[in-house]
Length: 165
Length: 192
Image (tube, rainbow over all chains, first blue to last red; front, side, top):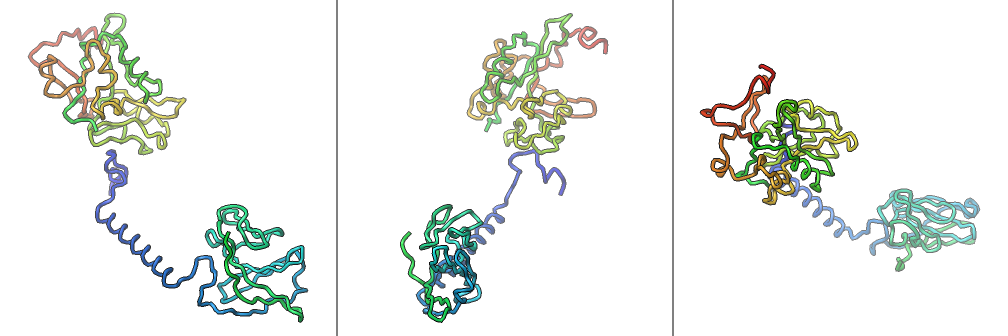
C-alpha cells in the first residue's frame, strides 16, 4: 500500500468504505443490539440494579449501630456480591440504605456528607429518599428498608418500591 | 459538481490589465477578501502586456502531492480545492511546488488559499466571478465545443516545465502552429 493509496489526492477516495465492509458493519451492529435488548427483555432486570419481582425479601445483618457514627457511611453487598449498596447514618441520626448504582449510567455513588454524589458525571442525590437533585440522573436511587433492632444491629429488610421522581 | 463539458480558457493576449478579475475575486464571499488571481505585468518598462494567472487545476496536482498534512484535495470533477482549514499547517510546500505559482499561504489565516474555480458558483452551473466580469473575455468559462468558434488559436492543456510534464483541466489559448507568433523574443525573454 503506497502513500498515494493512504493519502489520496481525490476527495472521493478518502475514507472509502466498500459495500461489503459497510454491510458487515451494519450486520454486526444490528446483531449486537438485538442480542442486548433480547437479554434485557428476558432478564427483566433494570440496569440500575433495582429488584425484579422475582427477588424475594431477604434480610441481612449489616453492622452494629455504634460502629457507624452519625455523618458516616458503610458499604456492603446485599443480594449478591455484585449488588453493591451503601448504608448511611446521617448527621440527624437517620438511617438510609441505597444501591450504589447511579440511575444515569450505573457508576457507584458515594456519600459526601450531605447527599450521594456520582463522580462520573457529577450527579447528586438527596439522602432522604434518593431523589436526584443535580446532574444527568432523572430517577431516584434504588432504596432498601433499614431496621435498627434492639440488640444494636442494623438490618436490611427488603427493597422498597420505587417512588415516582 | 462542475460540468465536465465546461472548461476555463485563459487568453493572455486579450488581457488589458484592468484588474476587474482581481477585484471581483476578492469580493466573492467565500474568498474572505483575498483575491486568488495573480495579474502579472510581463515587462512593465517596455510593454503594457499583462497576464492573469488562475489555478490550472492539474490532473496530477503537485501542490496536493507535496502537502504533508493531506489538506489539498481534488473533487470528482477535477477541481483542486483550497486547503482544508483543519488540516493546513501553512508550511508553504504547495507555494514552492506549484509550477504556476498559484497557491498563497496567508500568514494571518495560517492557511493556503487558492483559486478553486469558484466552486460555490460553478458547481451550480454559474460562471466563476472573474469570467463574469472580464471585459475582454481573456478569462472565458464556456462549453469546450464552443471555444473553436469563440477564439482564434488552440487551447493548450499540457505543459513541459523543466523535467515536469503537467496536464491541466484549465487551458491557455495559444496561436495556431501555422500562425507565426508575433512576439519579440528578445524583448520578452531577455534573449533566450
